[in-house]
Length: 435
Image (cartoon, rainbow, N blue to C red; front, side, top):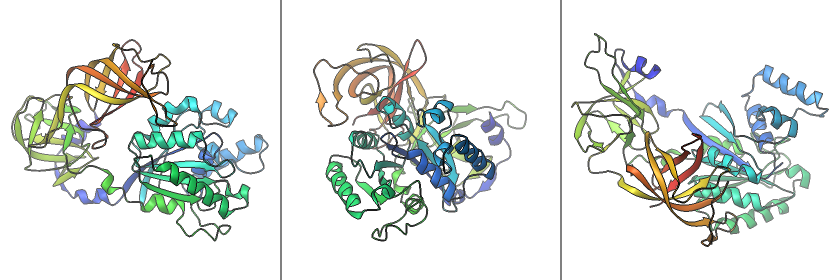
């Protein structure tokens, strides 16, 4: 409703370039249990001065009550009571902070195998995945599992942080062995931009400040990487996709004829005067105005949320999509996708589910389970396939109405959807459409 209020006031001219000055980087952390994910995030927040004094004092007091010799920075992200009691991360913990160069959203995900689905949730929108490795343990099964999931989800960048270097006397040979082993494993991943950093999250080595204990390391700190890694090209600025989320009709004397279409640009660039096609009707019109926060833009780009006015009155509702004329997504009721199953109840062949794709809701039936993926080896299991919690597999579904979509590798927004249980209204599957 706030969007309606701000977009139906007088429209001023606005320079959208100011929105490009502060990029937003979304990143997720993953690793095995006790690799130090929460401690790393606490260190990032503390050393970058993104923690309020009262927050720090609360964590200091909690650490003292628990008999810990130092302030436990992991408690900044372990928000649930059960997490603090057990010293583990159970749910996805989101944290927000900023530096003069960028804004950040962190998703701290669990390390336990039974919480793999939580990693999928946290990583689904990430630009970068920080994968932690305990320097004493080296590459383990969870390292490979989380790397493969990051690759399947199309995360463009991976930072492999070899943590707890202080516990191996900052030995360069230990670090080099882990890097060599991971490079060999990473040849099977789709993600090719991989960075390696030796750190000690507990002591702060190479997290925000350079380590004096590892003079042999000539690379950048983790914070420098987060602030400077190139992410502008991660977004598809070629194919315009604008799913309609809300139709704004004020029904007031001042804006009697106002009709705006609000939503988030998931890819592409949109400008005043551009000719667009409305899906599924196929009617065309020109952009009359592009508005953001009550101000008119010359152009807007993904991932901004804006309100569009068209020159023609066309019947448009939630779930429709604006695309550029001559550049339309695929249309089908039969779709193949990779699915990560998130429910205790296994996926049902011929089972009926609600499907949510961008802003469109339809019903769907699972027609075929082609295979289940061994997440550790990438081996395809084709016989007696059952998709249970945390499993990843390939399925074919049929929807009650056509979807307009792109391959996930081309567009992570129009190339993904979720399945929802009809009886409980719980999200049971996260899906990535195959080209």
